[in-house]
Length: 351
Length: 90
Image (tube, rainbow over all chains, first blue to last red; front, side, top):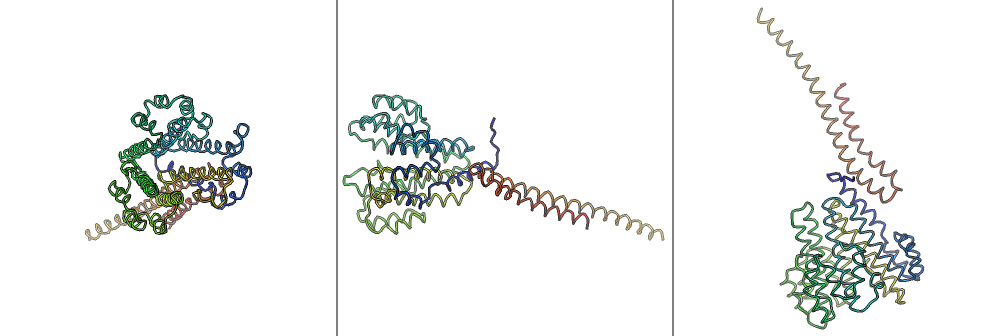
C-alpha cells in the first residue's frame, strides 16, 4: 500500500515535478517556427514532444486536423489525471476542485453539440475528461438522444440543480450562456467555501482563485463594452474577487475607455495587470484584449508560484500553462487548416 | 595547622571536580556540535532529496547531478565532526 510521508517532502517532490514539466512545455520561439510549417509538419513536430503516444495510438483512426484535435484532448486529460494521482494530501483536494471546471465545459459542449445536431463522434473529439466526469460517463451522456435525457443522467451531480432550473429558458432562447454563467458562479462559490474552510494551504489557494475571478470579471467587462446589445451586468458578475458587484456595474456604465481604465486601476493591485492597463490606451478587438489578459494572468500566476514555491501555486500554474499549450497548438492547427496567415494565427496564441 | 590541612584537602577536591566538569562540558559541547549539524544536514538533505527524486522522476538524465547536490549538505555534519574532535582532543 502506498503511504504518503508527512512534512514538507511530498510538497517539494511534487512542486519540483511540476516545474520540470513546465520547463518541457513548448516555448515561444517554437510556436513561431511552427507558424511557417504545413499541417503535416506541425503534426510531426507535435509527435516529437509529449504528444507522441497519443499521435501514435490515434494515427490509424484519425487524419490531419482531427488527429491533432483528439490527440491534444487525450493528452491533456491524461496529464491532468496523472497529476491528480501523484498529488498528495490537501493539494489533491484543491487540484481536484480546480479541475471541476472541466465538468462544466464538457457538459456545455455536449448540450451545445446536441442542440446543433452534431454527430456523437464530433462531440467526443472536443471533450476533455479532466474533471469528476470520466470518459465513460461523458460517452454515456453523448449517447443520450435528447437534452432532457442528458440532464436526467446528471441527477446527483452538483451541477444538476442549476441545469434543471435553467434548461427550459436555454431551450427557448437557444443559448446556454446563462446556464454557463450560473454554473461558473456556483463553481467559484464552492471552491471559495472550500478554500475558506480552514484546510491547510487554503489561503494560498484562495488568493489564486480570487485573481482568476478578477481576470474573468475584467474579461466580461471588456466583452460587455464590445457588445452592441445590453445585458444585465448582475447576471454576468462572479463574486469572490477584488471587484464588488457595485464596482462591476459602475465600471460597466463607463463608456469612455480612458475613464474606464483609470477606474479599473483604482481597484486592481497586481503589478502585471496595472502595466497591461497602462498599455491599453486605444480601443482594441476584444479577442486581442482577452489573449493579452490571459498572458497577464499566467505571468502573475507564475510570479505567485515563485513567491510560494512549495504550495498549490506551482501545480495550478502548470495546469493552466498546459491548457494554453493545447489551446495554442489547436489554434495553430485550425489556423493552418483554414489557410490563415501566420500574423492572424499569432493573434490567437497565448505566449 | 589543622585548618591549613583541611583547606588544602578542600582545594584538592575542588580541582578534581573542576577537571571532571571540564571533561564533561567538552563532551557535552562535542555532542551538541555533532547532533545539531547532523539534524541540519538531515533537514537539508530531506528537502534536496525530495526535489532530486521529483526531478529524476521527470528526467532521468539529471540523476548524477542531483545525487551530487543531495550529498552537499553532508559538509555541514563534517564541520560538526571536526569541531567535536577539536573539542575532545584539544
